Amino acid sequence: MGLLLGISFLVLAVIGAPIAIVLGGASMIAIHFGSGLPLTVVPQRMFTAADSFTLLAIPLFMIAGSLMDSGGISRRLIHLANKLVGGFTGGLALVGILTCMFFAAISGSGPATVAAIGGIMIPYMVKAGYDRNFASAVMSVAGSIGIVIPPSIPMVTYAIMASISVKTLFTSGFGPGVIVGLSLMFTAWRISKKKGYGGEKHAFSMSELLEALGDSFWALLMPVIILGGIYGSVFTPTEAAGVAVVYGLFVGLFVYRELDWRGIHKVLVDAGTTTAMIMLIICTAQVFGWIMTSQRIPDAIAKAVLSMTHSKFLVLMLINVILLLAGCVMETNAALIILTPILLPITTPLGISPAHLGIVMITNLAIGMSTPPLGVNLFVSCGINQRLGAKLSLEEISWSALPFIATNIVALLLITYVEPIALWLPSLAGQTQR
Image (cartoon, rainbow, N blue to C red):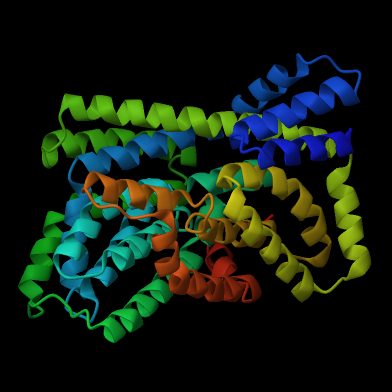
């Protein structure tokens, strides 16, 4: 049954079927031809996967991020970032990356971050004289910070699969997210210096900075409410997502007054469509993972790996290679659901914290969001340029993104082998990491 599952998966993947069809189709073929179980077990397992209170956080965080974008939050965060770093060499590139870090604390989604910030920054950078390929590459890679800095939808998925606290995983993401963001800013600064991209032509003004802080106050308050409420045990991550939706509606309708009912309708339709796609992937991946577990495939892989080496260094390196390759061809949530049951039995005997493994996995898969052929952030950037009337291929953006991807890999190695980057905040907060 396990062999049939693997062959079916590879065949469906090679012919280019969508990832949900690959996972669900391979599972149905394996169950029908490789076991005596009826196919009704497939919808039963899919329903079981979807029947989770924690998973409600996924559509709610999507709606909250979209509401804040439609309500004028993105523009105000960009204005604040511009006052902070816009005057440096490559100022607009730095502004884009810093704004993505701000927005990551609201959105929880990589593509949503690219769409919200890149939709404004890419045309702004091109108008200021930046190369279109460079501008698109910066926003594509910076958008991946959206799933590393909490709240993060993939963190919710991993926490469910690994049976650990979502709050602990959220806490673990701050250090790595800042490391990735600062690394990308350094690379953007170096490239901008070489290409002659100057900063914004305005002198630093404390009064203007304070004015920008005041204008973006309600935007910056949102992550404080969300994360402060979670860490203060006022509400669960799922409840926090619901609070974020209410807050986003309030700010967009009554504070900034840039959100109307037509905008709300579009937000709900877009969030519903994206949630349906993600949930179908999660449900079919759960069936796929259930078959693997029942066939003891993860245990067999763990024994095979640990029989070759008990070196923590080598095992983590092997995991990084596997995840970097998987991120190129698999959707993030599907990869987490399939690979978490395989990797946990390998890393647990070596004393690697499940929280640390989760951050390593998510950072790896974040890199995959900006690497072809399935780099979703790259497709979002292409879509933005098409709406602007510019023809820019996936290959052109990918080539420009290579220096940033290399930087991300260096940051990944730091996060992998320097555990305190991910674990010092949970330890400081007295949170269990298991």
